[in-house]
Image 1 (cartoon, rainbow, N blue to C red):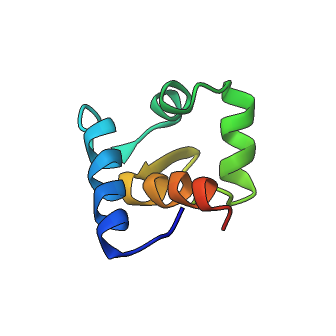
Image 2: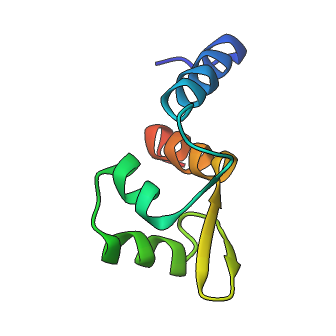
Length: 78
């Protein structure tokens, strides 16, 4: 597939629609629900910074933008 500006805009719209029912900061439970993964894997992805996040004490919060970047990188293999 050839990537161009229009494709990237449509891709962003797709992810924002997909995540519209979630707040701007996603917690670990919501991350598991969105990705269809177990909690242990979610924590591994966050701890090794595969998915960027904010850590407040012992609580991870994932900005929606970081999750979208992760999802997009998986599609293009970046």
